[in-house]
Image 1: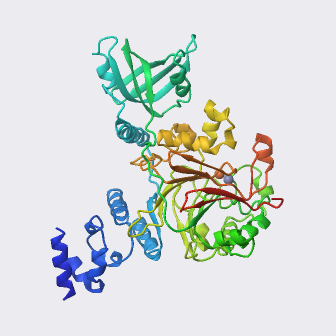
Image 2 (image 1 turned 180 degrees about the vertical axis):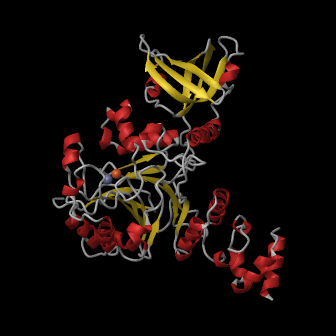
Length: 509
Ligand code: ZN
Ligand code: FE
């Protein structure tokens, strides 16, 4: 009986039901079907039965399935589905997590990657209203001198001329040209000084012979209209990174103090009340110190076996109350390739972490939606460990001069403005995909990173920027390169107010 109702309901919705699906509808109620959004109803076929009634990312599954069908192989798709099944009741939805095994890469893949990146950035840039008279580089040759023109192009060279102006060589799929930024336009000149190689920008200016005299440079940016989402109830999310478990510099006492607080065992009444309202804990990479990450690391390890490092990590994270959803992405110290995007931690090494029922494993980078409900779309959290940060601290004057590693917020702003997590090709090791997985296509509500071992929080156009701290005291290497880590701090966001506090669990704090 119910089957019939389901079919007529689906037909009303213009969804055709295959006989195969019909057979599988045995265990599904009409209510479950009605709870699906129209978009979700587009899923069909043999996997439907096990999926219906669970709060799954249909679109995501469909997408990963079609990618896999193209590239061959069933394994990852199935594991994705299985993983999601376990998490059916949670308010954690993985919007983007890269999970495909690498295939052999060829030079052409890098060409494809650059084309994919250009296409993505062009799409983002062309949404900007300020761009007029858009043309391509090949068409510039037909322009009269002193025409007003705009280009969307990738930066391939940047230098200072004898006269102290900036000369930028840019290219688009049709050719290459020069852009001159005159030092007598101080506001433009200052902004243009931050231009880095391989980034895609829009330039507006006056055309000359194989040159554009720039009047404006535009980046894809975060629109000023981005809303600051809030919820009615007081719920908190905490952000950890860079535990470096296994290192002799790991700070077990501090971490224990944090765990005790999470369990309501320490702190004053207010602090305990806050702890009881934590629903989400993000861990943004470098869970363990790893093995063989740098020469001589062995001497700085208290746990020398990688499995044991992850086991210890699982033992500690198990102490986080079970109702807290833990979301984990890898970093450059974790046991896997460091080329990005990094897949979720390998089960072979981190099996015991996978066994924790409240842990969701995602790739680096990843986009996670939390706390969605019937009438609230949830918060999007972009997780990125931050391997590219070192390059931009070293190469972007405006970041370096304002504090470099002490100003994680400036690095995050820089990347959001460019809508890319590693705009310069050499800023990170990159594994070419069909799509550029490091493009920031959707603007998150919260952007969280790690890697620099210093906590900071800021707001940029209603995106909450958070850098996690670390749980490792200053290492000899950091001493040598002049880093000043601030361990054992925990940024925590009140989702009702979107205010961030940084709590301190350090021995002397
Ligand atoms: Zn680290
Ligand atoms: Fe790191």
